[in-house]
Length: 289
Image (cartoon, rainbow, N blue to C red):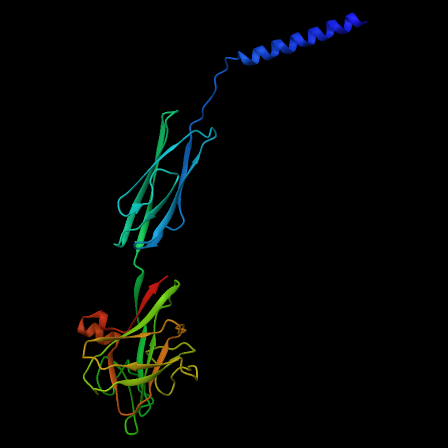
């Protein structure tokens, strides 16, 4: 009985030793699969001038072979250009730019490349008024877009016991991005009083149109002014700026004078077009974050 057991154990050991030998001496070839360059991603394909965009080259490689990356561009620069992730710094000029990455697997003598288009845009934007008008209390049905009580192609703020109250109404396109600062730009259109003029600035609370607005049907606005602004003494065709960063501009703003007897006249959109200088028109100067 013991002899049988010993023979069985010897046979099993021999089989295992033969099997192990066979595995060690196997001549089956090892297959190295070629990678696949799937895509190049960017956390943002649109960035501000001199801003950054994070790029990643996505490669599928079942063998995890060592890969080499080479990034190139037709504008701007990289922090480093030899890794699967690169940070592109946009140039100071706006426009479309192209970034190309080439990937190599030298073991397989394989390479592939892919190009992505990026856009550098200005951090600043100018939004011209969509509606601009003034109303006059002594002519309650006057629409300044159709007729002008004093001078054509302007918007004016003024108050006096004899001539009544003139107020300016302005509306602008909606701001689509988060803004760091917003400044109202107005350009003086004619000579007038040579004194500073303080005014209230109100938020308008309902929709309105320059084509139909009059003193009689002027839109509602918040009862309390959002700020007091001072119009300085400036020459004709010179501009002034008012910080409206914290103002709700959804329906625009209204400007009403505080002091009596002093006026300010500014170019309207139509007045700027007549002069052939669009930068004279009422506008918002927006700096994005």
